[in-house]
Image 1 (cartoon, rainbow, N blue to C red):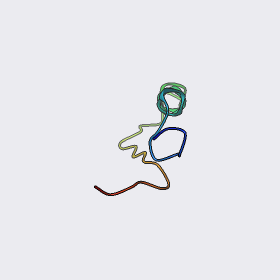
Image 2: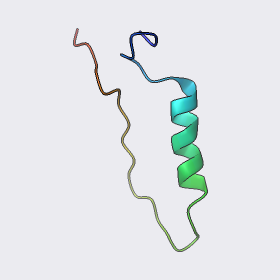
Image 3: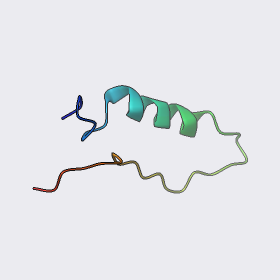
Amino acid sequence: MIAREEMLRADDIAEAVEFILTRPHRADVVMLRMEPRIQALA
């Protein structure tokens, strides 16, 4: 599923977490939603 880009990779999630953790103290990240661009429905 990862090879077909139907599922996020661990480094995709890590990059999002890094983004949140490196925001200035005055910024509050309230919500972050990540999903694959193409996701097969079961």
